[in-house]
Length: 110
Image 1 (cartoon, rainbow, N blue to C red):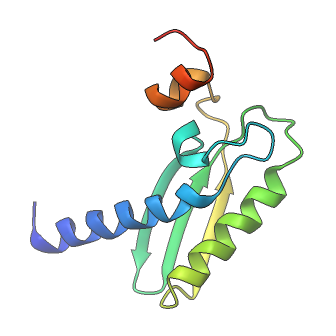
Image 2 (image 1 turned 135 degrees about the horizontal axis):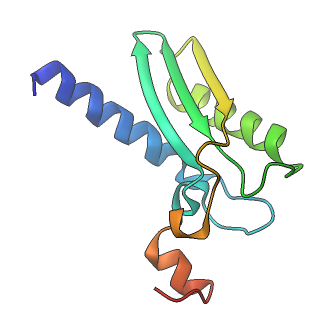
């Protein structure tokens, strides 16, 4: 892997973890630990893209989560002139997308 690819991956990992502070309003768990973030990509020097899903397609919190994701990433990454978010439903979210630690805390078998 080239050095620039490693740097990009490290930046994308950092951005992913910036979302650790955003909690699903119903489950009250970090959206990152729930497995709701499907993709974080730095497209260029000014653009971040995030694909995320909801625990179910009819969840009314989608617009709120989208605003929270965009606001947090704009605040923490002033270089990002564009923060694009997209709700995706493929694959449909399942509890096994959540971290093992969170599933245990919620009472799900591992």
